[in-house]
Length: 531
Image (cartoon, rainbow, N blue to C red; front, side, top):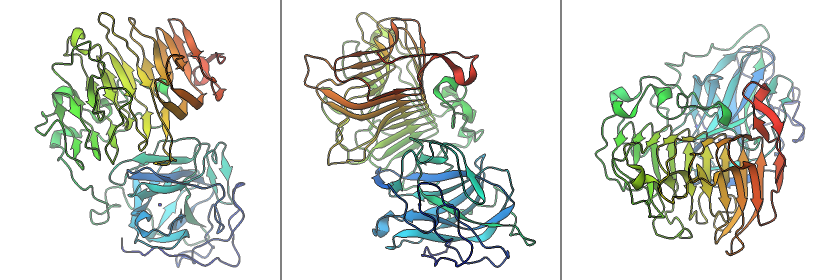
């Protein structure tokens, strides 16, 4: 899901077949025997089409893959992916093989194809794998289109040669190929290896990370604001893989890269960037308007020196929300990404910032550190096109003033319609810390005038005053909600309690939610019941 190799279907072998996972019918291996080994290669999923596959079109590039551990030494000669559509434009750009720590062992470009089904891409040289070591196989879907089956990896699975852990399916959004580590809904993205167990003759040892990805083979972003030389002291992604209760100011935002707001050069570009802009490694002194869409902000600091008046109900430090009503939809054709960045309003007086959100609108927010504003993540006016994804963000030190109304995160509307029936709304693995004054909830879910469809709240730590988690359908409004789920969250309440429901049908699923207990295994204290 791309060097000069052409993607093609492979004929099944007669003898060695993969022992296929439970949800997929058994099938034969797809790759021809590599010259370097005498044993036949095997695949994890076989030749048959996967079952229960959904086709997703996110509209933004995404790397999708699978974590696995071989039970024996061997080599990977080819990587394969399942392609459900005959549209050549949705062919992944490249396939990659990685160590569990994110070192790329191999990357091969993929030629566009109208073929469907399992597509096999031969690596330039077979890569040697070691029994018991973890690896990741992935494909870079530049188009944002890919197949998925949710809950496939809700438990560990084993083939004849490989073991896949629970939540083996991984992804990351970005405009160039990068190591995938995020998980969602135990999904399988149908990327696989052709693995040959060692039998006397082994393949070529894996190249070192420094030489494994030539510049000529890496996909390139379309437009970039160059990152200054001092903006990447390290290449850490500390928050990846962590739950909400494991986040802090040292493993999200700029800190994992050895950066601070003061260490970054001042941004000189427009505060209303054009579509296609890539902003990286700068300090933005002002409020950023991303209404044009198709914009990525990463490893940057958004640090305004002044803010909107406290009585402004639509104020935000960063937004793609372009009008004055909560129900006014985001109108850009393409979504936005903000990741590995810091939004810091501590230089703004509370009287100016207490009504402002760190972010307002909809988009993908990943691993950001947000502090010093009135509210954190405000998914308002989300329209009908784009996902609303908040993942591994740390929101803290919110400030109130007068009669301001403050939450760490809010969702007001999210309608799934024919414009994008596969759009996703979720708060996953965030730490949402509520200020002491004028707060209603850490995460406030309120169908205010419009519907909220299909929201998942999972893996978060919600702490502080008010209610930690509030689900609300106001009787005075026309909004409603459905299929809202809360799974595996932790609550550290110092206010009214962990959770409450006011109006509407209540939680469609409430499971494995606990009081936060840092000394307990997985921080599980007493179970919290649905209100």
